[in-house]
Length: 391
Image (cartoon, rainbow, N blue to C red; front, side, top):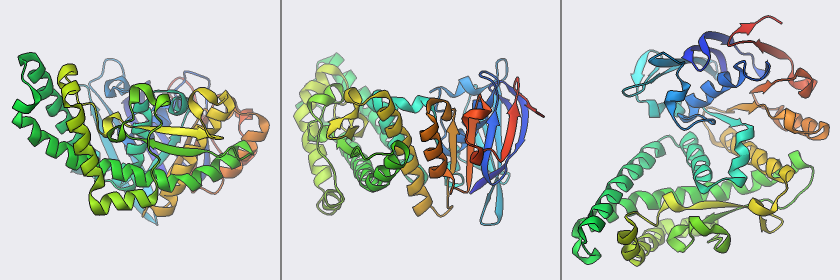
């Protein structure tokens, strides 16, 4: 898969923009603050329905405007399609594919990309929410139907939390709240599917992660992913004290066949019901889980150096791209490297260039042209003050 052309209207600092892209590497060059990252952020939004920089869509709309439009002409296996999304300041966002309306959440079905940026260091050092989001976005790219499962879980979770808060306010005890059992059934059904899908994804990421880390860092520090699950007693507020249960392919298959995940989830809800009524919130489920990154047998968070953390985060994104390349019907995802090379020494720049050179299309942003290896500089796009300019 590749992007042939990107058009923007009132997105970030762009009044309008029209940018053609070529197969292979495309290098977007501009000084900081000129708008180069905004271009790749727009493409990342098309495939994930979110920004890697902000959590609020409204920040993507140019100041003083009511809506922003992202329009990309995509090509796969000789076929072209036009994917569009309108991000509205008020009201629901709208989307089209080949001029026919679709639900925005269907867009990842048509376009897959993997974006790595300096902000991704928070995958290693930040809170669990970022790691859950990484897993869920990758799940949707691999299986778009899971967008509906995740959305339904969030809806049920909100409704259950509302009920628990109401019960706390009125002083109702857990055994008097029969309505909560109904929401428990829905939460367990949806949540168990998410837990098992994440577990299988973690298992499949293991070997690509090891290879990618070695290719970037030049050494094998035994990178590993360990699922930390609240239904088995892990607490996202105190992860170092309870790394949780490492999931394997066999575990995932066993849980699917004998409903062990459902049983554990239901038992965990029963065990914490009193605490939930006291705190007014749902305390177990995939919304409370974490993914622990391990290097040389220790949690990377708190133990890894800056360079090791950077290599782990980058390797994780490369491993995700490798899974999509292997399994997706649309072939290679578009690989996006936002301001990555400035953080790397000469040796790691060369290693990264070698690692990404085989992808069908790679989009790279850089403030300094010389930071990027010559092998990735075949097609250069210059950005200045929110406009594409001739050098």
